[in-house]
Structure formats: C-alpha cells, structure tokens
Image (cartoon, rainbow, N blue to C red; front, side):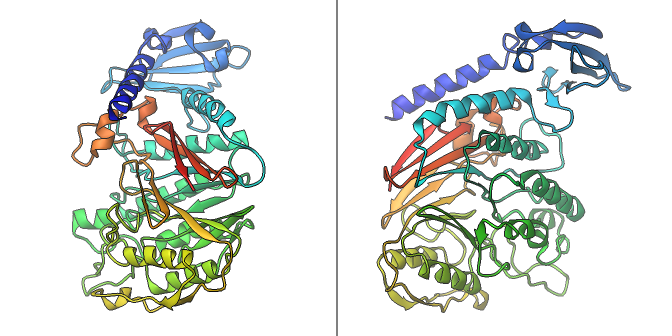
Amino acid sequence: MLDFFAKKLAQVLNNHKQENNNDTDPMQGFLKVGEYSVGAQENTPDGGNYTLTVYKDDHGILHQALSPEESDKLAATYVRRFDSRLGRFRAFQNRKTGIRYNVTDYLDNFLEQIKPQIRSGNNSINIGVLTDTHYKDTDSVDFYGNNGLIHVREFNHLEKSGLLHLKAHLGDWIDGSDAGLIGESELIKLRNSFKSTRTPFAIIKGNHDENDKFDEHHDLKASFPENEFEKIMWPIMYAQKELKYISRYHGVAYFDKDDLRVIFVNTSDVPYILDEQGKKKYDTKLTLAIREDQVEELIEILSNSSGKKIILLSHGNPINRKGGNALKYNGRSLHELLVAFNQREKGRMHSHNVPPEFTLSNDFDFTNVENARVIAYFCGHRHVEDQFRINGIQYILFNCSALMGPGHALTTKYNKNWNRQIDDITEFAGYVVNVDLVKSQIQVFGYGAASFKRVFSI
C-alpha cells in the first residue's frame, strides 16, 4: 500500500511540474511590450478571445493584462506581473477579486470528479473544510504570506456549485507574527472574505490567532487586547440563523442537518492574564486547552442530542493516536467526556495537576440520551494528514492550506513530500467531506496538497 501511495504521489507531482511550464501557460512567452490577440490556444479564461497587453511599470517590471476583445482594452479583467525570484510571470488574478482563474478551473474539475461519488438526499451532508491559512503581511513565494488570504477567497469558489451544506475554517487564520494593528486588519479581511449568505459557516479559533508569535519574537507587551479575535470574528458566526448555541462567549456552537449534528469546539480557550509588564501569563500559541465554562456548554448540547450522529470540529486534536493528551490542558478529559456520552454514563469531570484556571469540575448525565453517538472529530493544527480511531471515535486531521515550501525548517515532512510551489496546485490545500449516514461512511475529498480521497466507516 505504501509503494502504491508513493507511486501515485510521484505521478501527481510530475503532473504538477508539467502543468507549470510554458506548454500549459503559453502567455509566459510574451515578454515584449505590446498588444496581442490571444485565445483558446493560449489557455485564456474559458478559451475566450482576449487582448493581452504587455507593459512595464515605473520600476521597469513587466506586467500582463487580459481584456475581453469586445471590451475597453483599458479595463483589464485579469492581471499579473513578472517575478524575478521565479524567473516567470505569476498566475493571472481577477483584478477585482484577486482569484486566479487557473485555480477556479482546477476547483471546477475537482468538483466534477467528486460529485458522482456523493449520494444526494436525506442524511448525506457535505462540509467544506479549510485550515491553517497563516495569512501574513509579506509577498512570499515559498512560505506563509498574503497567499493565505487568496486561499480563503478561492476556497469560497466551492460554494458556487451548491454542493456544500456547511463550511468551516479550523483556525490559525493568521500567522500571528505581524504587529497588532496589522494582525487585526488581517483578521477583518479574512472574516469579510470567508463570510457567506449562501452557506452556513463555522469560525474556529487557532493557537496563532491571538498574535502571540509577534509578542514572543519582539519580547513586547500583548499586541492584542483581550478578546480581540472573538470581537472581530465571532459576531457574524453567531448571527447566522442556521447555527445554535448556548452563549456567544466561548466559540461553541452547533449546526444540524437531518440526523447529523456538527459541534464547534475552541481548543484555544486560554485566560487573558497579564503580568506587571503587560505580558501574557499564558502564550496561547503554546497553550492549547479547554476550560470549565466551555465544557459546561458542550455537556448541555450533548445532553440534548437524542437521535443525532455527532461530529466535533476544533483546531487542535484533543488526543494523539496513542490516546495521550494532545492539548496542554484537558484534551484527554474532553475525549473521555465524548466516550462517556457514547456509553450513556453519568459522572463528574476531574482535572489533575493543572493550574487553577484550567480545573474541570463539571457534572454530566447522559443516561437519558437515546439513539445518539459521537462518530468523528475533525481538526487541523498539525500541518499533516492523519487519522486514527480510538474508543470508536474517528479522528481525522487535515493538512494546512498555508504554503509550506520544502526549504523551511517549520515545514512538516508530509508537506516536504509534496514539494509545494507557488502558483502550482500544491500551493494550497482544502477539502470537501461527505458524511453519509445511510451508507455509514465518511468520504474526505482533498484538493491541492491533499489526498484526493480517504474513506472511513461510521
């Protein structure tokens, strides 16, 4: 099986390299200033006839602009510039939206491939999943940068198919390494790009979303005020009529579709405590945790979940494949609560050797719940694809959307194997997850630097 996977991965990577040369992007060869008529043979958008204008800006950098032949040639629809670091033009982007048409073509093809494999009808639910975009204020061609915002905008293209019932970003929206005001601006841009009137959406907090990476690198006071992420990101999530919740304080909410219930959990539930120098007691980036108030809401939701098959979504995985605690505090306790729910138990949660801020003392009673079960847990954070099943709960980890070039120390082995490149389809990663309660299976379809298909039994 490993040999088969290795051969398939090598084949995919070889195809990616072929797609990135001038055979599939003939307009790379137009380097002389002027106007040219181009069409399908130059791989124009939808094979249409366009005027290609090549010009230099005030700094002598070459640009290309595509305008439909019948329109005003000054009103370019797609633009791109020559990048000396790459020795080629970057991918064309829509001038208004910033979306690359070669990516939307790729995503359309991806959707056409997966649609025949998804049963429509009752209790067949599709969830779009994106995680770890690590948006950062830099024009990087091989690592985290402003490509993170582009990935969010292009992920939204999946909505146009009408296939999704829910979409979720699993956290680490930003890298958290820019100054506070910049980080806040980045969150606002991401929020405005991700929100939707077409598809219900989940906004989940990641461990980088408190901007603690900037504070660590500069040894400064907290660059985000208390609840900054929450104030910027959560109001639009909680305003959706399709979502239900106990309160709006902790990031917990749930979405029902037929007999499936999807619950959102916050694994970056860390108290905001400053010392005399204005520095945080707990670095959220390093302190993944859940606390008592959030757990109380989760217990209340679970207690009223009769007749539901349940999937939980969060940024970090609460346990690892050996069953050990994968959060700083209370990850194993969360898993044990879910097992107690599946076994219809009654009891009290306890914490051992944790600071007082993370002590759990919640009572629970699931003895009256009928015909319900936690079937799966989705998460990101690890920048890999992984899966393991413990106590009947299927844990599924999703790869990061953020570009992780092979030459960086933080790049995981999984992403080094993809040899991810800017403007190639390995640049990004995203998923459509089909949960079919009738067939008792979960299908995970990935695009970009992701496995095309993984299947799990419920």
